[in-house]
Length: 636
Image (cartoon, rainbow, N blue to C red; front, side, top):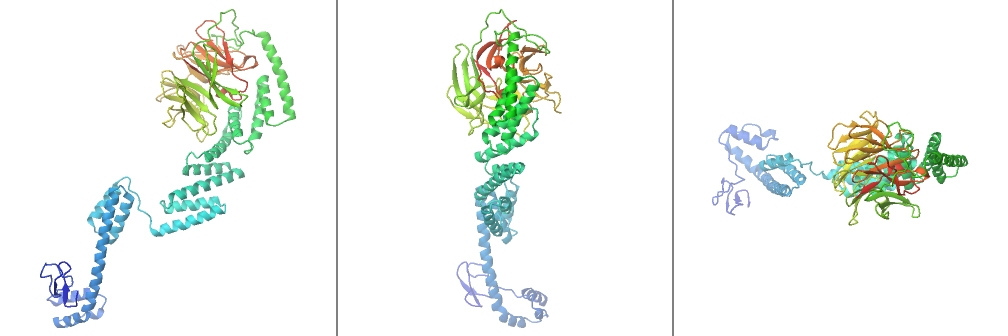
């Protein structure tokens, strides 16, 4: 634009009269051209629209001359306004183009959120933009489409709250810091996500430690849970979480289930002997267990429990009880030796009734072969103060240590499953006996008693890993590449050799009718096999017979559930304790442990002979505070 009467074409640069409607050279429209209507009504409407806020202009004009005079007066103003509008329109068109191009680029790069944000901004400038509306509809229809980035104002609010949270952490006000950090995340989830997560982790962990010290263990457990949300499997938090979780599980434990209570308390004592009242509760549980055993005239077992309590602290009254139990234990052993043949040390009956209470002494039989293959079991090394997994060769009698800090071995081919006691790697592991490769399969210290079936990788185990601390049966794979799958509520499970059924200690769905149950591996209805609540640790032979341990005769004995007749008979029943049965690979012999004679040993029994005596294989050590949570494995 040169003046008010000429115009320079923006397309070709030709200067022409402003009165022309278009450029005479290229035909580009003259944006400043105003066509004056011929009739008065149209002219009046034009002026009214142009200056709608000038009421004095609303009178009808009857002549073109007066309008031209008016146009000369305001022409400069109108043209100036138009210039501004034209400039703003050009800038806005450029912004719209840039926004759409950027949105397309984001969409092509799968950055849906950013693309949606650009399109929303574009449509505020040009609501009718057809391509933008079409692209926005398509992106919002995609499952990955989410809300656009937050505004600058919300970003600023998030930044201010984050600074407040940092100040609160310096003051040790962990709860308020957590609430403020959660507000940051709610207002702007994309604001410094790594820093916010780290701050939430630290605040929740510190809050958990404080609540733990104050005795609010439920609150501490919740805080540790929240910390693990930010940093899963963090070993420091996991250790505290396990400690608090184990302690809380005691509140719902059966007060008469001394064995399992001792497992929990001993684990807690090993983690932190000064935690809460763990030391006192462990002492009281050992003492109460001793009292309960003494009431049943189990003097040797009562003595052991009393002495375990005295290892924690001295107590004059308990020392008296321990001495009395030791005296009675010796007398009871002398009485047993007077009535039971000294050889073999464990006598067994291979037939009889489920109600048998006495042992049939078998003598005059030829020695029975101990069998072939290798027995794997764990034994406590008192010199080094650790558990070791032992391999005992039945043909040569030689033994070797396979692994330290491990218990509950189960061997299938060249893979040994075991429960790790290494504080840095607790849970179930698989160990390759050929290569020495060790794989951590599960990460819960509550995962116990792995057992094989007929699959080379899949196995079954029991655990109290769930929040309610109830026993459940799980299956998983030895390569550690899959999460464990919960199968049924129960414990001490076994798999059938055909890998088509799980046998376990459990109840009906209402928690009644305890005993051994069998359920198809793929799921279905569980069938009750035995009827005594103490029946546990089933071992399934290739023919489907199930050896298990039970206290239905007063002490722990080994009974047999016959698959053909579905009847139960005693297999190894003596005044001592026998348990942890396992079949030989060919299903003809049984290995088990017994404390006959006052010491623990490993035995085998030929189950095919009409009359056979158990054969002592090797010693099982002297320390077994939780022997019911052990197991033996018999491999080729």
